[in-house]
Amino acid sequence: MHACLKQVSGEQMTNTSLRNRFGVSENNKSTISRLIAASIDRELIKPLDNKTAPKLMCYIPFWA
Image (tube, rainbow, N blue to C red):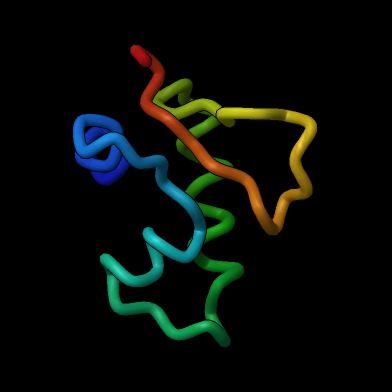
């Protein structure tokens, strides 16, 4: 849902934006990374650009 909201706002989801939405501290960013990886595996989101470093990766909904 977060990726969809970002998409219709003309933005992209990032690890940081998802952490902020859920209120997860920087120390627990690996939790968000696992959530993103699971969402990619289920084909709910996809990377915007595979050539970007993982730290700077942006994600969009599967339908975008």
